[in-house]
Length: 353
Image 1 (cartoon, rainbow, N blue to C red):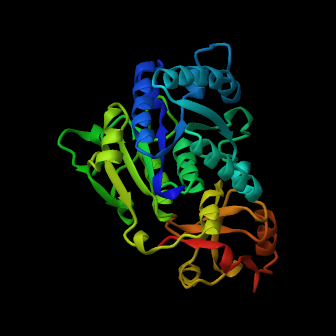
Image 2 (image 1 turned 135 degrees about the vertical axis):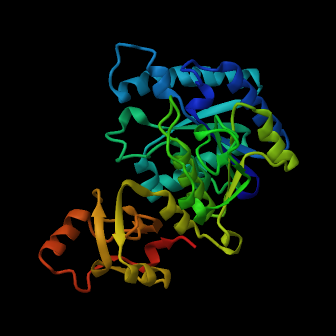
Image 3 (image 1 turned 90 degrees about the vertical axis):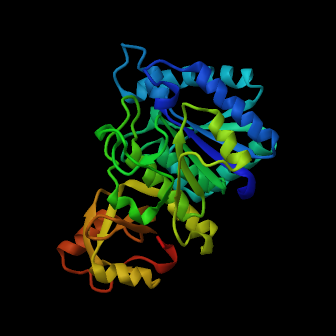
């Protein structure tokens, strides 16, 4: 599906800018997607707002209950907006297990492909009603959108927000802040990306993390204003320049395999492994990860889970599929029996370029 598939993440700040559902805006967005569909593209939407919609019931306290109540309201609103725009939609609710399990991952690919082939726009959201903790599932829908983009082998990922793109520093700091038209993803450490929207879980830092993940898989990621729906079709159909395009300098030369794309998608967002300089170099040279090169373990993971790899400055360097669980690894560390112990095999490690 890659050459003509686009994934559009519509955030809570776009559909509920003041805590009230903006029906007209969603209708306009679906109308733009209709234009894009008619031009021969497949469209997939990641739609936030279930918890926000569920929050209208003051009696509900937990996030899970609000999501269960709000998801129905959100999809009713989405169905109405899609009908007015004369497009057909289908709903997919995903948990991290749907991605981490390779068989489910493959089944999702087939479902997405069939829906798109029939002219139906899949509307994807996290299954918040069954999430045990945020660490056990996706950190937010920005990351989910990046995963869906890789899952569907999309050419573009659009992360819609309530500002025009990514700025050189936080625009709330004052006027005259530069809007960046292109970001090479290695330059993220120089940007002030802190802060969240008032109604959503994510923020610019979250969007750039998702953009980096997508760009690593060769997907063009664009952060742009969702308050102006017409800009979307201008970028896709007319090659107009709006928002901020996020790239990895070498990604055009990369060939990301289906397995590597799955490893990028299936990470346990609540766990990470920090590596010393020697281990980082070893992985960059396509070697396996040995326990002796581990500096620190954060969070918990099971054997055969995908975990983020970091350097000692907590900068992400890639992802890998573990051979043992975090608890087993900690036992080896405590007993000083890590010599020669392989934590990740080279074939199961993806290192960012």
